[in-house]
Each structure stands twice: as C-alpha cells, then as structure tokens.
Length: 437
Image 1 (cartoon, rainbow, N blue to C red):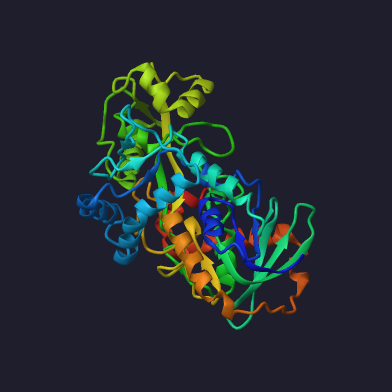
Image 2: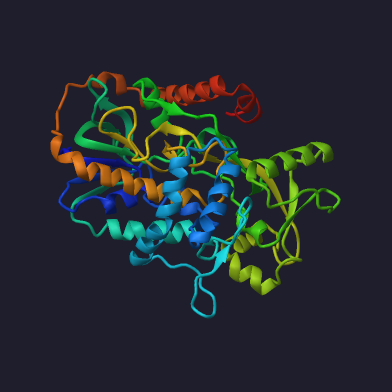
C-alpha cells in the first residue's frame, strides 16, 4: 500500500469533517472497519445543538457543565459553544437540511438537561442527514483514498511519534501504511457491551492500542447509559428511542401505568430512576408514552423512523406505551486530547467519541455529541494544516509476526479495555460490564 500525508481512521462525522477541513493538496487515506455508513454518527436521532444568540451563551454553558457534573474543561466547552454557529453554517453549505417552521425559520427542539430549545434536527434521523451529506462531499475529493472493511490493528510509532498504522484488509491481508499525521476517529466501545445502541464492530480497539503505546487515556470509565432504548430479547444492537421523544412530552410509566420521574433530567439521573423503578416493580423494563403529548399525525411527522420501528415490533406509538430500558450509549472519556485534538503522542490526533477533550465532563448533555465531534475535528485539521510541512514520512521496520493471530489480538484488546474500565471504576464494571459475553 502507498504512503499518505494524513491517515484518518474512521468515517463517522468527525473523520469526514476532518477530511473536508484539510487542504485539498494533501494526500489523504480514510479507512473504516465496516461499511462507511455503519458509524454511530449515522444513528444519531435527536439533533445537534447550536448557540441561539449571545444571550444563550451563559445558559448553554451552564447546561453543559451541570450535565457533566462540573468536571468539564471550561475552555473546551467555551470553544464548542462559540464555534457552533460556524459549524452549522458549514453543514448547510454542504447540503445538510434541518427542519423549518412554516415561516421558513429553523425549528428548534429541547431535550433533557437543556433550559432552552436550541437543538436543530431533521425528523428523527439527524445523524444520518449530516453524516450522509458529509460522506457525499468527501467522496467527491480526488485527494482522498477511501477504503471500507479495512481495520487498524496497531499504530506504528518510534520514540513516541506516530509514523503510520498496521491494517488488515477485507481479504485478511496485513500491511503497513506510513504517513505524516494520523487522526483517530474510531468511535466508541459499544461492541463490548451486550446491550448497546452502538454498532457491534465498535469495540474500542483504539483505546487498547493507545494503552499498549503509553498514550494517555482520560476518564475511560465515564460511559453513558442511555435511559431509553426499545426493550428486546433479541441479540444485536439496541434501537434508540431518542431523548427528543421525552423532549416533546413523552412520560415514563411503571408497571401500573403511573408516572414515576421527571423525564427531562440529565440522562444519568433518568437512568438511575428507571433502574430503581424496575427493581421496585420486579420488571425487565418500564414504559414510555407520548400519545397524550402529541396527536397521531404529529408523532408520525416528528418521529417517522421511531414510529416505523415500533410498529415493526408490534407497538403503535400513537396509541400505546412502548417498553424501554437503559443501555450503553456513549463514551465521554477516551484518548486524552488538547483543544486542538493533539494526543500525548506526537503527530497523533483524536476526534469524535474516540477523543476526550473535556467537553462532556462526567456525563454528556443531549445532542452535544455531533457538535463536539465536528468542532474539534476541524480544529485538529487546522492544526495539522499549519505544521504538516515540517514533517517527513519515515518508514520503519515492523515485526509483522505479532499480527498473525488476529482473533487472539481482538480478544486481548477487548480484555485490555474492560480491565482498564474495571481499574478506574469497579462499581460501574460490576453493574454494567461484568455480565458480558
């Protein structure tokens, strides 16, 4: 395989926006472990936050900090909020559409933890709308080589400086790719959990690789459990019931049909209340009902994807409550980065859910994920643009024998990540990880 100036691992919103933000004269490689569309960015339902106006800054900042239990990095939160409108304008220029009111103004919704209606959305498939449009734009770029079903199995490094990656292609061939700069945008860790809204192939490989190379991780145990996914006994990824459903007035009910909590509290609080109620009722799930908050046509128009999925499962969202249960959803921690996406290894950057730049603190505020991913992916791209001319591609010898048993390597990586979560937070591990296959 040829060498590239920039290697981007991951084709979700962060990786795609980084590629679009880099100079067109750079030779870029993008790889993804599965099909390009199978990133969690495509699954995001609720929306993307934006600062409404100057008067909204203080409340948006406070909402984000409060949800994060004030463990957020103030500077990162400030950067995200102040950059939000430029990012939204960028998306619109790339062809992304958002819902509008009858007068042509943008329609904003609200979710748990927000004091204002500041979330832009496109039906209940906002992530798909944004990420598909970005993917379309990237595929037009002549300077980007795009490889699906290609997995990074290691970082090539020398003296704590990234030199490239080791990859395995869809045919099982292992090879080395060298480059000047490397961006990890590999998503989260949902594939390690039995119940998760994430794609199953997102197994946290980057975090295991980082630990092996002494790259600093931050708050890897800060893992968000989403309060409401559709309850199912089937194997595989869990279907998310967006927070925006509760934002539009849906209520949570116990086994007797009684409301038991305030649905617009931060996600960790609502999750705790659901778990407590399930234990009290001796049930495997609770119920979510929106039929009294919106009429049938409003539900179908606002939540067409969720409505259709529930109907397939035998539940009519317009007439009855649906069974919901908490499941692993999002990683607030990850590979430690500064405000420009730089990790503790030279020439190595991280963005999106893979990175921990401190925006989310201990718990992510709803619909901040897409915005945070885009803001800091662009900052990483800008940082690379400014100093890549001073970096040379250096090929170094790699012992390829260590990658002969890829299945064994995969299991080792899984154990490394889970052991690190257990080391950082044994209680969380025992509650959510210890019953995994």
